Amino acid sequence: MKWRTFRFLLALILTLGSGLAAQEAPSTQQMTEIMTKYATPGEHHRHLESMIGTWTTRSTFWTAPGAPQLESTGKARHSH
Image (cartoon, rainbow, N blue to C red; front, side, top):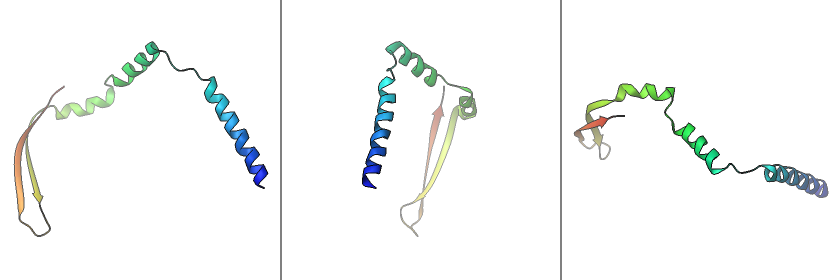
């Protein structure tokens, strides 16, 4: 049983290893194109446009259970 498992694992390692060795690393230019594509804002970013602007914030929090609440206010500015 152990010998059969060993042969199976060895065959699996050799198969996967040969597949990985056959792959070439992308060139610098290809990598730049790939990264530029993924860094370019897409359609899902339009959903965030409603958050553009200046906002007044109010936070309420407690330092411990049963402790009086603390409030804090501030401003947040979101832009492109």
